Image 1: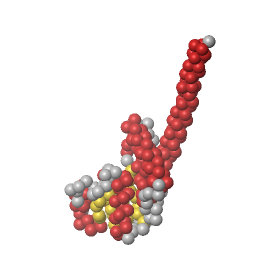
Image 2: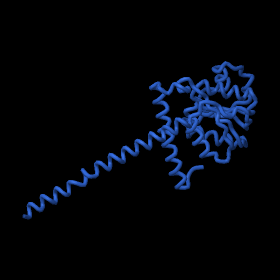
Image 3: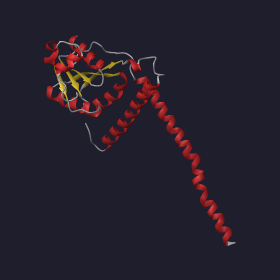
Length: 215
């Protein structure tokens, strides 16, 4: 009798892990559904046009990562949307004249109005580097120029460290993620990767805020 009881107890003891398996599967499905719903929201947040082309700001800030971004920033400077242009995340050794040459602009036309930041290596660094430059310049508003798929995370990082600065979003529409071309696999992976980075940034900001860190 004792052996039978022991066997019954062993069988009962073995059931909970199997019983927990469906619950784990449901939790996984819910997590995937939440991630997918968030991705759909993120796609809707990626701008396909520039909503504000006229507001004048104290500065124009370009995040390096594509020639189209710099050309857009220079166009805005030429149009008088700000008096200064700050390029964050410049490779060491590149100076204003070289950047202008690459963008096919006359160095003497804009060299006096452009500052370069060499320290940033990622979007977090862009925000920190720009915050320091803005404070040193006494600026209170900026127009942020970066690729449209990169804009949601850039705004998140910039607003986290510059809550008192007015930020005007100015998306650049690169061909690989232009409207109507999301079906391309390379574009899809690019956007999915950016969405995952956005989620990590949101979690990091939440933890830092809870601990009283940041800003």
